[in-house]
Image (cartoon, rainbow, N blue to C red; front, side):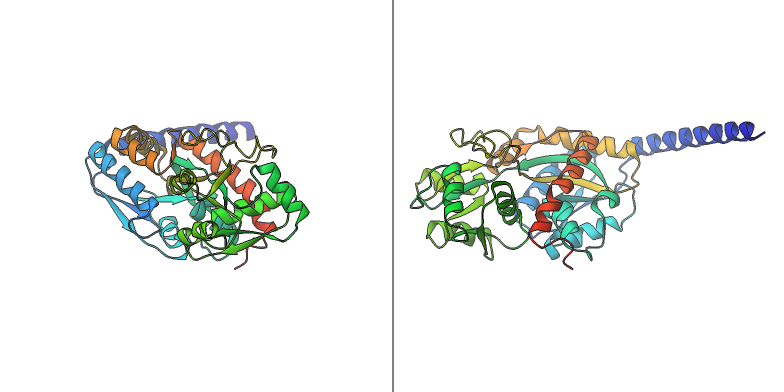
Length: 329
C-alpha cells in the first residue's frame, strides 16, 4: 500500500511539473505585454546607467515593449536591489546589478535586506572589468615583485588610494595584502577621480583603476602600470603582466555587471531575456561603447552567471572578513 501511494505521489508531482512548465512556456511566448522596468542603483550618466540604457534600447527593439530604466541611487546600489527583491517574479522588474550590489554589500551589511544568492534569479552576465595596479612614476618599484619586496622591507609605509571603504579597489588592496603577505595602508578618497589624482600628485604610492581611466595616464607617463587584475592580459595593455604572471598564483579580481530578476521568475522568461540581452551585446554600437568602458563582454547562460556569482561570494568573504567589514551593520 505504501509503495502504491508513493507511486501515485510521484505521478502527481510529474504531472504538476509538466503543467507548470507548459504554463511557463506559454507565458513566455506572449511575454512581454507591457513595459519592463530595469532598476539601476546609481545616478544617471555613470557606467551602470550607460550600460542599462544601451542594453535597454536593443531589448526594446527585440521584445516590442519599452525598457524603462529607473535610477534609484543610494546605499551603494542596495535600494534598487531591495526593490527588485521585493517585486513580483513576473519578469517585468529587472535589476542591472554589479559587484557592489550583488556581492560586496550583502556580505558587508546584515541589514541590506536581501540574500543575493536566494533573492534573485540570474538572467544575463553582461561583462567584467579588470583593474590596473598603477603607481606614481617616482616610486622605485618597476614590477609587482619589486613592489612586494619594497613593501616587505617597509611595512606600513606604502599607501594605496581608493574611492572609499568597501569599494572594489579597496578589496583588491586587501586581497593583495593577504596573498602577498604585505602591510600597506588604505587611504579612502571620496571618488575615483580623487583617488587616481592622489597617485599622480604623489600623495599615495599606488592604486587600482579601470583601464579606461588609467591607460591614458599610463601612456602620458604620469602613472606607471605594474600589473592587471584579470586572468589574461588586457587587450588594450598587452605589455602589462597579470598579477599571476607577477608571482601571485590564482590572483584574479574583476568587477562584473549583470541583469537579475526576482527569484521565482518562470525559467522560460529567463531564457527569453537571456537570449535577447546576449544578442544585444553583439550589436556594433553596444560592443563599441563597452569597449570604450574596458568591459570584457560575456554572453553566457543564466546558469554560468549564477555559478560565477556564487564563486565571487566565496572568494570575497575571507577578504571582507580580513578587512574587518564582514557584517558590520
